[in-house]
Length: 148
Ligand SMILES: [Zn+2]
Image (tube, rainbow, N blue to C red; front, side, top):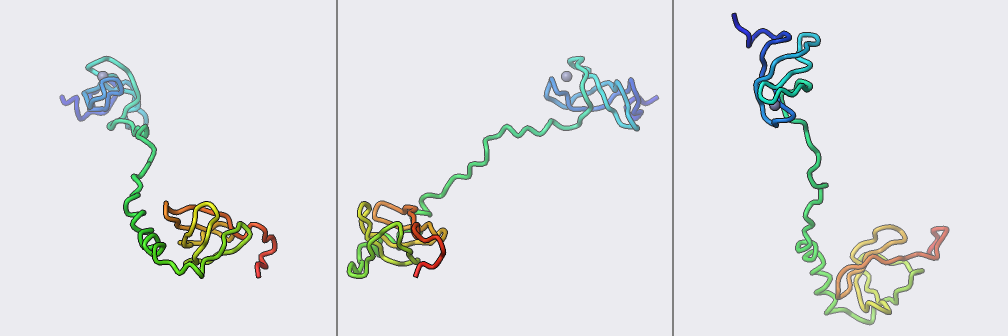
């Protein structure tokens, strides 16, 4: 008589023990629809719900992908090198009311000369200065969208 193949209460089955944290032989305590529902660990005698695998634990660190700052800085390298060879005459004075376009040269009262690396939103622009990129406001005074 084979106990192992007979899935019924009192039979034996390999299951994941939530206490031992191992796959161990368990005794079936209760069956539901032909499947073990509750089992008792033959090792620690703990009764628990039947499961064959350890519970998925999502306690791992929140997905904080390592930011590739080095490559990011490399992207700005082009702007930074351009900064040193700028045609200063074409620089526009930065004001929050002004609107800028990608590639424009900007003269900022605090940060100095920079190049617009991207227009994030209509009222937000990224400008690369000598010490790195900064997000700055643009078109702050424009309510209607008629900036010109
Ligand atoms: Zn156990």
